[in-house]
Image 1 (cartoon, rainbow, N blue to C red):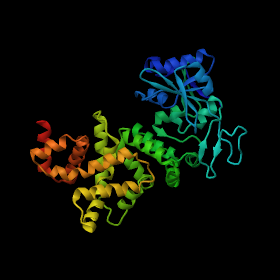
Image 2 (image 1 turned 135 degrees about the horizontal axis):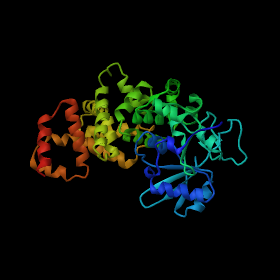
Image 3 (image 1 turned 30 degrees about the vertical axis):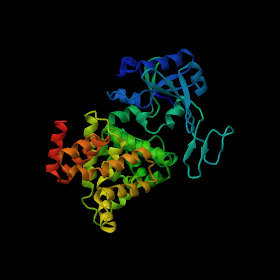
Image 4 (image 1 turned 135 degrees about the vertical axis):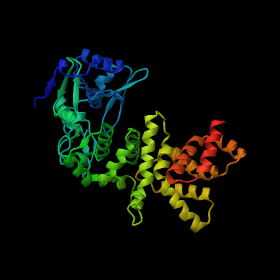
Length: 403
């Protein structure tokens, strides 16, 4: 397949927009005799006029060869072997051009690729050409290359056309691609939300058909991807897409069942407000602790469970909130939330009743606690969202100002 090549005068990318670290890697590989391209999201974002979060490099050099070129590097990964090249304040990820995965009934001689019986790719280190690498990528807008040798854009998949149309299109058969790696479903939702793109219709239908495959993914990997979804700055749009495409209930089954219950109408109000609040914090540059993110998302559900516990087991409010939170977290096999984060979530929830006691002595004690700010931010959000405790909230706001 002949690529579409856009010469330097006909596109907007300049080397001035690329980090010094990425340029050192690109030129280092080129000078060592290898093909080296800026690849993926960095090229996409530069063409869209956005500032890339990071720069990735694709090359003809094998991981071992890359490591020999750069002493400040380290081999990482098992599923996909990569090289991280370390600089003072930046890490450049370098991958070797990859070849197509073999048919499920074939096993390569070197055993570098292993396919589970259901088609899920578990390990893949077959190396190939730039064209093969582009065709292996997930979406057309992520398969563009910037060639440091002549500063051109190389496009094997009509990705520039989709960029202009603001369309997220899967490369190849969406059913096959989501079977190979169901986490691509979450990537599709994240990119569509963050870039304000539409997901191409056949991909939308494939997402609905394969959403249940997310239940078979690594729980730790899902935790990482959910963090990315919540951190993209468009979490409210992410939530809308997850509901539209029947993905939400496969990520958060207990919440999904609660929302879909006969009395579930109106329960999405809290969640919509939660995701909108997360976006406001992101826009303001506020670094949100993962525990606060999950406390917000699960908050109304945990409070509902706590109310049931108080009725049946006669526990105090704080004790019931702790019990409800821990019961819920123990059920979260789908997402492996680290223990430190779950402990922090429980502290945020159990601290809520303390904000109803408005005395200077109580304020001094609570405000010294390490998770005070996160607990207070939850209390403030809950008070305004549910229309409750306005007097107590005003009092605590004054305490914070006079601190």
